[in-house]
Length: 305
Length: 257
Image (tube, rainbow over all chains, first blue to last red; front, side, top):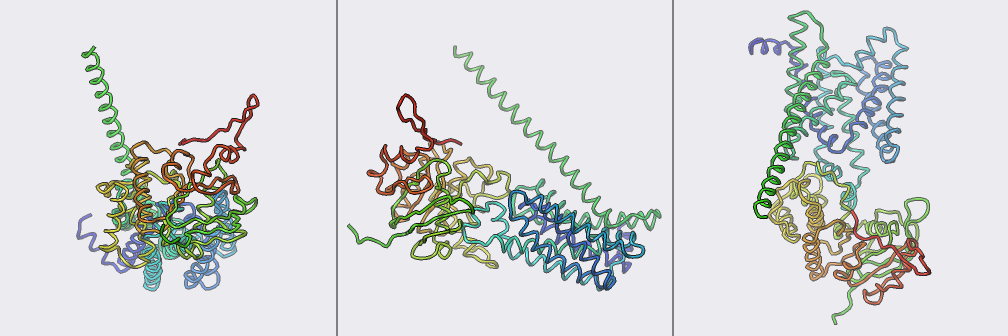
């Protein structure tokens, strides 16, 4: 595939919309994902994603595609508030999140299964339709994503402080509940924004994988978000192109959002492999250095006696 | 003698509870401005609870707590707090200077970026704890004692009038211990009120003017010389004492960890 082919592919209106959608979602998801990673909120994010699902279904059942956004938004706010309080229980909070996750998801499946042709609708809601994003859907994605991004950027410093030292954070006079609530609403909004294009479940990968890659690449706070954003956006573009190539040129219909996620996973595994090798080498160097040091020490001791 | 200052912290029959049995019952005490109080008692005696109570972080179920003449939550900007540091993640990607800057976040609010005065406050705080040249190092790469001093520096960026320290000397080697003692001494000379929990009686003697002996209630509270006496300590630790051959032996949990 030459550069000209790539330019030609993205000059198609549907491909341009898909590209914009995936770039916006991956950038915002990656930045918010840094805070999710630092605060170890991967499981609650999964809970939020599953809890938005019945909102999508109810919206769809009541008003078709136009109802998806409003249904998801309502579910997102309810889920964010509910899970914020469930997660605050500390001991046993994982069980609480799991119960919310499973019950909300089941509710969504039961509701959608009453519809005609529900398998294809279920598939659309869970895995998204990246290539058929309309102009109005694109606007929804951009606006909802930017609201989520604004919520996280405004509270960024506090979120980092909270992640590092929760006791010190509260002692400094911050309201942990407010910060939890804002973050969970932001995560739920990204799920809402991503649901129609990437799918309700796959959007989770955009929140979690890029930040995990960045954590392996750098140990500096200031670099986490830029690296995560770069990895995520690049994987989005590559995944979209791979899926386009497979479908249009080779006639293999590959889900573009799943391809994007797979590209992200490949990047993660490659970086994890590199990280392990580097770590192993530096450990080995340290061990060798120490044994040489003690050998030299023994040598001088022996010479002295 | 200078004129007596208004007390920094006043507790009146204060009872704290996380729900269920109160952790600490009926604390009445007046801590003078510039005093240094050592909280001493067995594990679970309510030392940490009292410190958190002075920050308004533990529900007060009875009595009153007044800090600098107000509710604790209203004057948090003037209180520095050093939590027990063993819960911090050594892999967390922050530098020492970034950790110390966290002490300025509350005053910065949501949208303002740290400016020159904030960076200067960080540099001064690092200087005070003897880590002036270490700001760029990753927090997790510092030794336990240096991390402890880093967190103290964070508490100092707001130039607090009151410093609450939870087991600050736990697991410190001699160098870090001396450095921390010197910092505390300097702060006391500036008139900062210090309340610290500790297992270390020797340290209480070196660094404090007053002692509060705790065992879920106040066993004794007063000036160091008249309060830190053998009979009082035996009374405080009676729960963990054993009787052997008609002699009372108390096991003092010394610096461990």
